[in-house]
Length: 342
Image (cartoon, rainbow, N blue to C red; front, side, top):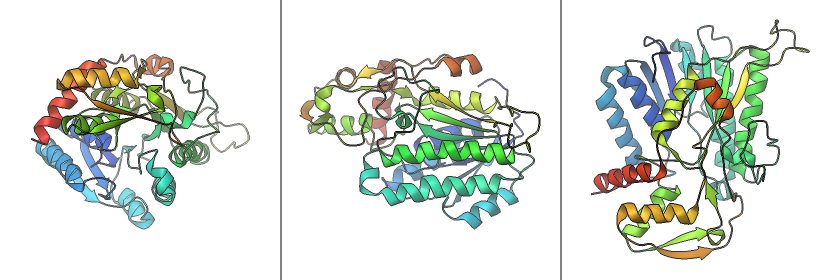
């Protein structure tokens, strides 16, 4: 990352024990930023993986990283945290993730993704030192749109899962709070992030585990699916570059509610080169040196057939070109997995 952020900055990262939040925390603390990380350490997947991510950050960041176990749904604690610490930046990666799980436990998504985000926005009002608030949205907000590649100007009013609906709601809430209270906010629509220390519920993790165990992997929609797989290091670099590019308020008077717009925006973060699920499996097989046993199953409710990020706006803003081809990223993931799980 170019030194466009002031190293003396204090940064709050939510979901700090999660996949992306931990990677951001490690990168920032290793570069001498003061990072406060919070996470509720829920049991959606193995808590030991989350704890090991925190150990990795503490090993690298040492005195630059402080972890606080905290639930985003605890409004008074969130308010107290933002009052006690003078944050320059907020990076909100904490959320209940997973499209399919949102069919089983929709209440968990409403609590964490909507109530939790609301608590952060409320606590951010009036923080004069806060320069920029970046939060995780998702490519899922595009629903079943066939307008590929997905552009930020696309209508996202028809989400096809509860998870996607909560993320679309976050974007609307962000615009409103930015408009009313002048908070500079950027939502990053993340496209299928993968890599070392990833989430066990994601395709790369599940496929690899089952192939190594000689178990069948399920391929949805008979393999007629495409995803814009995006490597974790490219995502971290992208978020940090966006964090340094603070959106300006449109309109001369933030209290002129009739005419002022908002210093809120959304940006895609994706590789911009989708691959079919079968091609993904083929590359993974080559990285492992073992063939997969495949079972084709029907299309799942709440899922989407293709994702493809239009990265025009992101590149114009940051100038960053993604660097990690899928075969390179998957090989790094396989190496980490086999080392971590012995």
